[in-house]
Amino acid sequence: QVQVLESGGGSVQAGGSLRLSCTASGDTSSRYCMAWFRQAPGKKREAVAGIVTSGGARYLDNPFQGRFTISHDNANTVYLDMNNLEPEDNATYYCAAEAGCSALDLGPLIYRQGFTSWGQGTQVTVSP
Image 1 (tube, helix red, strand yellow):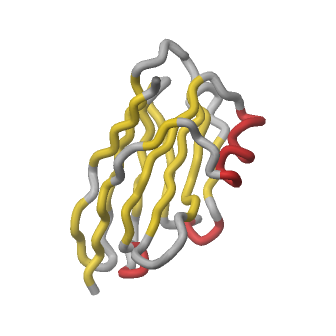
Image 2 (cartoon, rainbow, N blue to C red):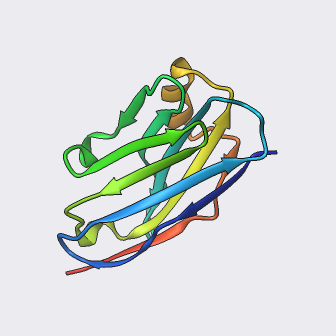
C-alpha cells in the first residue's frame, strides 16, 4: 500500500507564492505517476498537474500554465510551485500517486482521477 503525504500549504496574499511537496512511500518502485488535484468548497475536484518521476513526462492543465510548475527531485517526491496566486486558487490540494506506471498511463490516470493512493490534502488560502 502506497502512502502519500503532502505538505506546504498555507495562507498568502494575492500575488504570492507557495510550494507544495508530496512524497509517496511504501512501494519499492523506482517510478511513480504523481499528480496534484484541488477541490474548492462546493466545487468538483479538478486536475492541476501530473508527472512521471522517471523520464519526466509531465502534464499541466491549461488554466495553470504560466503560474504553476510541477517538478520532482527523485523517484517518489514531487513539488508544485505556485506563483502569482489568486483568491480563486483557494482550495484543498491533494496529491495522488500510482506506483510503477509510465508516461502512457499519466493522461488516463489524471482524466479519470484513477490514482490508487491519495493524500489527505493540504489547504491553500489566498487573500485579496
